[in-house]
Length: 92
Image (cartoon, rainbow, N blue to C red; front, side):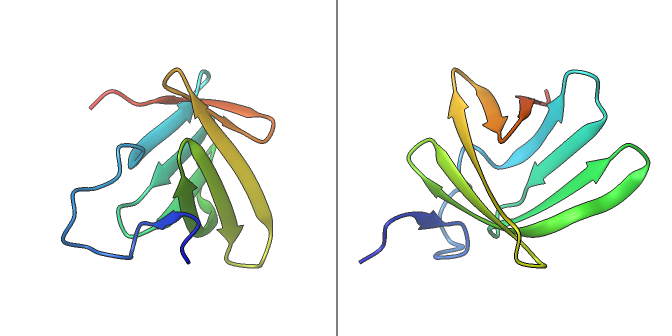
């Protein structure tokens, strides 16, 4: 039984609507949710400061960093609340 949607379950589907770049208001933290269920987070000048996988269940996101650290996030009204961070969708 699957409890969430892993982004790499079926690559023939359209990308999840949360896929893309999310950025803090000051632009310091940039978190890209990739269509393959991976994420890449930059902090300031440090590219790929954190990388790992994510799973979406409804509006909830579970993250697992490549070194095993876990975190969560929730999207409410188009804003990503990721632990203590508030990230906004970057306009494309």
